[in-house]
Image (cartoon, rainbow, N blue to C red; front, side):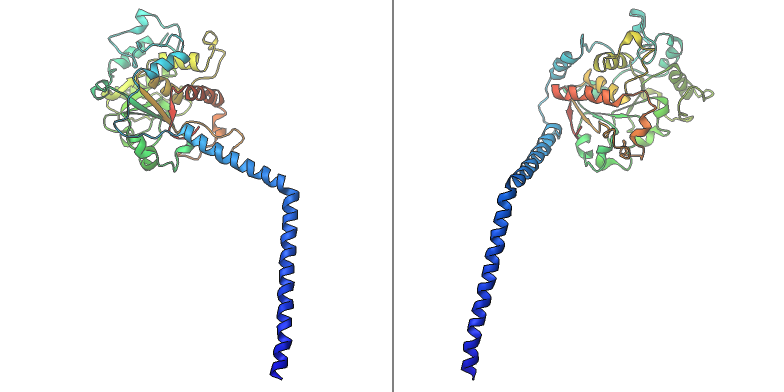
Length: 361
């Protein structure tokens, strides 16, 4: 009885195995047949994937230039040579900041009003220059190589971990009221210069800057000089004439305040953005503080790297534009800045190797 049952069981196992094997072969055959029919589609998808990987890698390699170390070779003369290719009649002879003892508008009267010149504002400007300074700190003047980082306020700095890299530069230029406190990991803590105008001045400059930071006023209008004069001389504050109320109390050391030479605004507008300077009253577009800061760096640095520049795609209405606040590109609509135009100017500088990008653009 047991022998009969054993003989009966063997063929059942064998038949089952054969059925399973046959099923596997059938499934495999169908898979091969499907692959043969759609192999061009698969190859196409694979090709697209490989192109995307290549593009991503090449993009990162093209636009990410971390500092190597403090002994990095200084490319003396390279910025001047490449800037001359982009800026006609390029010169480093112009002073960075306006100074009381050297009235450049007397030697060559300024043909433009603010923000491209000083025409019509000389009187109030002289009163401001009487209580401010104009020189670069000796620690910067004595450098054999000035390695500069211009730090924009773009959203791409958020979670970038670029702080340590930014702090390694000899000169770090920041913009407007962009905070450092609480964002050190991404933007660093060193600030050599901060360019601003009254509406963008941080109410407490000591909080977001180093004790030796130069606070550089970028004048757009005569009221900007008047604001500075009333603040530094503790006169009655001016409340009208601004698109946004500037600080009424601004505790800054006058010895650390500088007035940017409007020449750099003129060069930015005329040479980088190609604005028609003879028709300025018809042209509402004005350069951003960020692009002016890059122009300034081109005129006194031996190495210029930028970080945090570039705006999100215009179709992306919800993407924030700054690393520190939740405002979107929509807020730029009423401004006098053409961000697309400026993006092209920066891309041209990147292509020439005149500046290099620490983030991406």
